[in-house]
Structure formats: C-alpha cells, structure tokens
Image (tube, rainbow, N blue to C red):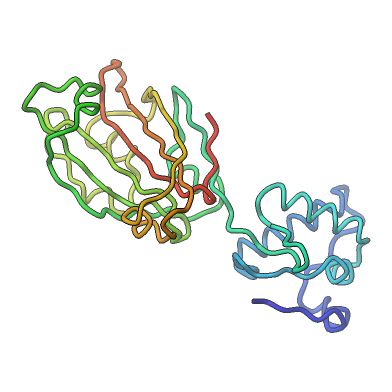
Length: 258
C-alpha cells in the first residue's frame, strides 16, 4: 500500500511531479486528470494503491481543492479510481469496454488496445467432440458431424478477464490449429487461414450468473462471484453458420455495450 505524508509533499512536490501549465487553454482539472491517468498507466499507481488525499494533491500541483475534487470525481466515473468511505481514494482495476453489434464486432484484442491494456490469451485445451443439441442446431450439423472445442483464457495486463469456449464444425474448419490462438487474435487467424473476415454477423445472448468452482479457478477468482455469460452465434459473409463463442466474463472487470 502506498502511503503519503502531506508535509513531505509540500517540500518535494516540484522534484517528483510534473507541474500543471496554468497558462494553457486546457482546464486545470483536465490537465490533472491526464497526469493521474498517465501515472496509473505507467505503473506509478497500481490497482489497489491509495493515491494522495485531496489536500495533498492540491499542495503537489498548486491548485484548489475544488479542482482536485472535480478531477477525482471524473476519474471515479471513468473507472480509474474508487472512493472508500473513511479510508481514501484508491486505484481501481480498470474495466475493459467492448461494443457488440450485429456487424463489425470489436474483438477482445482490439478492446484491450482501445483501453490501453496489453492483451494475451492462453489455450487451455482443444478436442474434437460430439456437440450438444443447441450447438448442432445453430451450426446446422448432420447427425454424426463433430466440432472442434477450444477452451482458452483471455487476459488484459495478465489479469484473466474471459474464459472462452469455442465451437467450430470440423467440416468447415478442416486443418484448424488451436495452437495458433496462443497469444493471438481469433479474428485475424480466421481471416488469414479461412478467409472469414471481421464483418461477421452475429446474434448474441447474455445472462448473469454465479461462477462455479471449476470456472473460478481458471479465471483466478473466488467461487460464487458474479459473472456474465455471453454467447455469440457467428455467421460468415454468406450468412451461413460459422462458429459459436461462449464467454464467461468476470463481472467486475468488463463492460459490454450492445
């Protein structure tokens, strides 16, 4: 936990913190907001760290407490900070934001990049299985047709965000190499290997649930925590069923807009 001393800040602020430009056209609270964001992105303040108090920040940057208060409120609204009554203001683990549409879905990798996070993925398992009825019905499979089932964890800055279960019909995705999805974009692999571009059309369903022990272990969270289950039914450019993606998403680490 990072601790701060108000008197020390008054003496050393100019040595350790960038001063704000009071002659600039940009409001001081916005300058301060960008400065704090930069320090969070650079790792000076990490998730769970306590930032200086409002009087300390006012002394450090030589601005009014009203300016500081407005900055803190804005950063709390954006998900960078969280206030804890009686304790102070802390850096929040930032949520990823991703927009899901019928066209041009934003991939996990893209959502990470847009939010200033480093994406990564780890393939847990891959196997050829006989699909359940709901999978067969959407993919329009015949009785004995099988699917490639891939399970992988998607992370941002090495923090697990999503457990993704993928289902690909073997007839359409012959030669699929699950290892190619290790620390790689699914959309890019599908385009390069199978000519399926990112203008896939999808139908998505979402539901809230409580995470099981098995899934909690894979996502490094506690059993019983809230998760969102997002199921994407993807079609190709000719409107033929392509594949299914079922995502188990850590509720307090992700925000989705439909």
